[in-house]
Amino acid sequence: YLFSTMGAAAVFVAVRDGLGWIPSAWSSVRLYSRNIFFGMWISPMAVGIGYIIGPLFTGVWFLGAVISYFFLIPVGVAAGWFADVGSATAFKDSLGIGLMVGTGVGILLKGILPRAREIYLPVKSSGKGSRMKTLRWIPLVFAAIALFLTTLTEMTLVSSLLTIVGVWLTTAMAASITGQSGINPMEIFGIIILIAVKSVASLGTIEAFLVAGVVAVACGLAGDVLNDFKSGYLLKTNPRAQIVAETVGGVIGAVVSVIVLFIMFRAYGTMGPGTELPAPQAYAVSTMVGGLPNTPALFFGLVIGIIIYLMKLPGMTLGIGMYLPMEISTAAFVGGVISLIVGKIKPESKETGMIVSSGLLGGEGITGVVLAIIRVLTVS
Image (cartoon, rainbow, N blue to C red; front, side, top):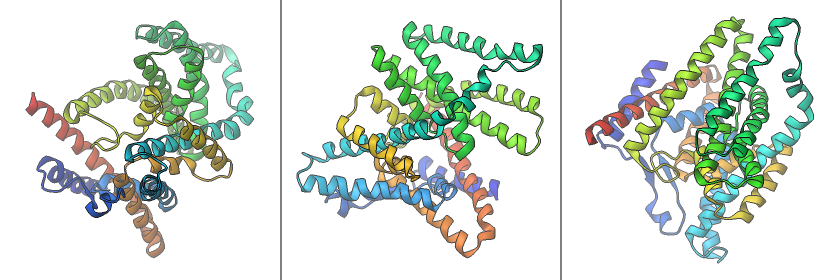
């Protein structure tokens, strides 16, 4: 199932993006004239993501989109709450990001701080034996190397030091929350540290991106690695072999991902909501770096996000739906509905659906990169 669906998705994307025979998205012109932006991204990947996430989270995700595109924008403009669609969009974007940041703060307040000793004490403990005492210094060596590398960029010494401290704090949080929930809000950790550094140091645009980027990437890697070790522990995998594999994969991934990013940028140009590469996590960070479109909406969303998280509701997913384009939310929601139907009618096929969805993700992702490379080479 995996490779067959991967191949099917690859063919579909080649026909859609390579030949242009299938539109990448559909939107309702009639509703658009009324400032209701409803449509659907014609993407196997988005449907697969929705299936994997499941009906609950895609339902909340879609609810956030409905609140934004069926209420805040059309009703807000018609009622005079906002001067125009642009102002309404800025409000809903800031509100959505605030919900996400608020969820991150809620995780910090409820999930991390009460367990701070449990999370950070093992880092301080020396362990038994000379070998453990030697290993204890390895993180400090890597921290020193990272500090040196950041000073070679446009970051000042103060922002570099604060970033490294932020990485030390947030990677433990990311590893803990990923192990518990399977969700790693790495961009939220990047935003939190960015706000903290901005409060004590003046940052330029590039420097601010570096602070958030370093923290987010470190948290993403920490969460993935620790989640892999969790799986390895359950499967009784050799930890030493895992360490080697994770190290090699991390180094190679750091190089390859940058190359792919530049290829995608050369091929598609602008990234963010409303483009072929929406990049929601990066968009949230860029919004914080470039200046908030609506600061009161952000702080209102932040407070609501904390409250929603403390009520054990998926506030982050709601925020994602509020600021992502409606087309992506609709496609993911379709995947969630399919997951719900399969679970009700034929629950034994739910796992097969996961494999099929993984194939859809891989097929569209790989084909997209290949088409981007072809586009860059032909243009050059």
